[in-house]
Amino acid sequence: MLRRAALAVLFLVASTTASAETKLSAMPDVESGIYEPGKQATWTITVSTDGKPAEGKVAYSVEKSGLKEIAKGEAELKEGKAQISATREDAGTLLVKLSYKVDKTEVKGLAAAAFAPEKIAPSSAPPEDFDAFWEGKIKALSAVPMNVQLTQVDTGDKTIEYYQFTLDNLGGGKIHGQLAKPAGKTDLPAMLQVQWAGVYPLDKQWVTGHAKNGWLSVNILAHDLPIDESPDFYKEKAVKELNDYPGIGNEDRETTYFLNMFLSCHRAVQYITERPDWNKKTLVVHGGSQGGYQAIVTAGLHPAVTALAASVPAGCDHTGKQVGRAPGWPNWAGRTWQTNAEGKKKDEARMLAAARYFDAMNFAPRIKVPALVGVGLIDTVCPADGVLATCNLLKGPKKIIIMPLADHRGDHKAYYAVYGGFLEEQKKGK
Image 1 (cartoon, helix red, strand yellow):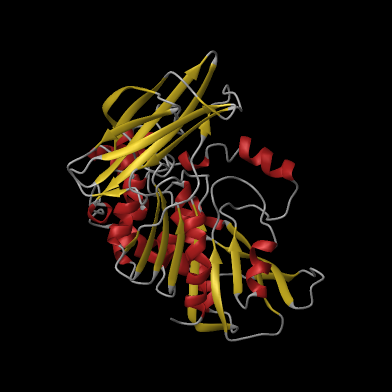
Image 2 (image 1 turned 120 degrees about the vertical axis):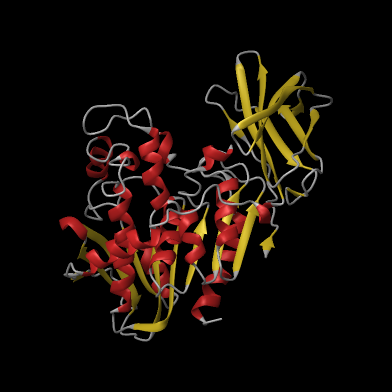
């Protein structure tokens, strides 16, 4: 059942040229931001300068599913407020882009509404050989010895045990991670945390905090890199060999960067299942953004996963553009600015064909375990249409937290208000 949650804070996005004293906010007339198709959604726009009501006009553009503009215009401010209304007749979202200019400054904002979110359908069906492809990759991975290299590290806290580890991946690569658990304990519920986008080290507290709460906590890096080098090390990797890594090899399902990333998640779960301190009952995979993407994929790939939690997950709806809605990060088939290994401009059709094997939407129907997913209605990085369509395909019990005022990096309090309780439910086996 959809949980219609709303944030109590106003949303503000300002351009780098905007004055700090000028503020713009947008609030829907329905707190949840959810409407029936054909019903009018109305947003109240508030603009202030130095705390006083602003004058002038707010320019707006209304986009269907974050892609197709269906209306635009200007709304006159009266005592610092204006209203904008729009609707759509079918299931999906509307995204409203707002702009207020005064002198040489500009303030921008977003507003959104979801219409029958539980009825948003997938943009395409999975490839016919989707399951066969992934079964083949997992079989090939299984033929590679895990070769666990586990090193205990003293954190100064005797109540927990902390380790760093590596596992072998397909193609000679390594999986790098960290693990923490209550000292000396066995029969433990387990969790796997997977990481958001970027190139950076792992923080010990990401596993030690959960270990203090009774978990066997495992956390892996998304890249074949050591987990605790200097900041300069990761900066150099990010601008050199891992620069724009989502596009590496993305014209072919056999060469895309995400293939080994997803297989590393599967192997990390398998490693947990083979540990004698796992209770063989609870194994939760969780993450946000790219981590949410990996969490959905992992739950779809490995039968030992018993629950998943994904905040504003990426990787949903790679074929969204084909049905008139904005696809989610990494905009797989839209990366035509890149060149391939032959130095030629990348082919959109080839990228799109490969993308279908790596769309979170196509893993969702294979997931029958409890799921918690957070959706930001004004998220332009991981647009709500694709995330909601993915959620609608999940076959297990689900809590979908729709946040009408949340963008990708903003305030996700509504999700995290449920997240802690969700983990406790899983730990208790409920």
